[in-house]
Length: 133
Image (cartoon, rainbow, N blue to C red):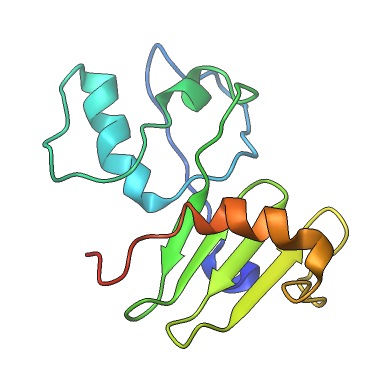
């Protein structure tokens, strides 16, 4: 659920949308691939499909983006990654919070620090619900 284990390259070439040589540094996850392909094809994704289309980022890598990347490992162990933060909550209730602006290597878990309670609460809203597929 940490940066080194979950970060992977994603390369997309969409004729008429992407521009050669552009790089997007926004956080997306693989759940967005299917909705993005549907969006590129002008087809509505089926209702059971989760994830957000990142087509706007293909057209403009610097576009505003509020959808975090979500990673799950085994039941109810989830991580939420925004451009600045990674929040992890384990099935047993343990938590980790890393500020990538100050700690890109994720060495200082600040989850127990009360000054980050609001950040944790906001990121926790993005976690999948218990026993979600």
